[in-house]
Image 1 (cartoon, helix red, strand yellow):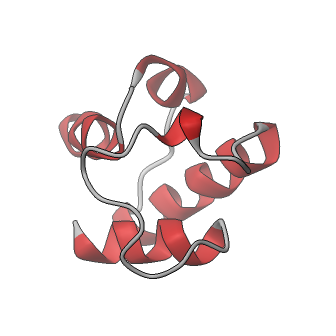
Image 2 (image 1 turned 180 degrees about the horizontal axis):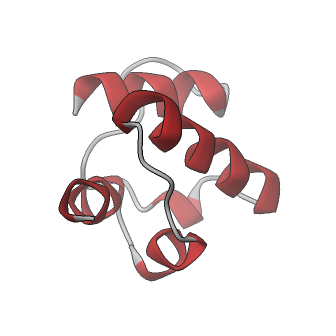
Length: 72
């Protein structure tokens, strides 16, 4: 999980330690469609999975998203 969160923070240009499993990523100031695409790329790079965008739309927190990816 830490690798994912670190990559999430780095990709969205957020300070280290500012994102955790309970972070509601849609509430982040820079969250937009480009951020969603960037997160999809992280998932492909870290977990070697291609994710349906619905997983990102239907998840609420970073932890929810990661659990959905791991279950896919």
